[in-house]
Length: 88
Image (cartoon, rainbow, N blue to C red; front, side, top):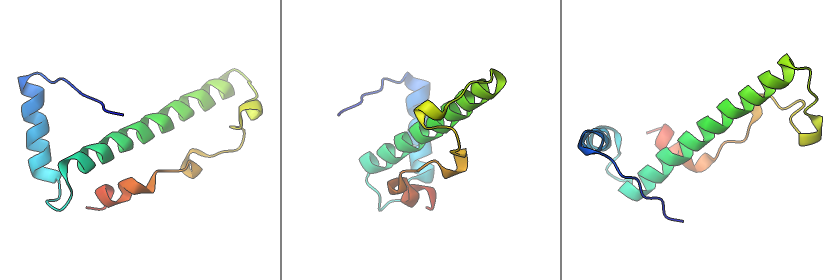
């Protein structure tokens, strides 16, 4: 799958500055951006799970039918391929 993003001049400059400051030289730009994307997706997934669980708690809903009854957010699997980016 290929994802293409269109940035205005200010956003493009900000992305380029970010890349220059934090991307390790040994990691290819494509891999770095893929890792950033994966970390964002994982963070969004955690936020959504938190919101679903909070909604269920607030409305006395049983989430066991979808397998969320006793899964703490901290135990949510994380894609370890992004660890290299997180630890650099």
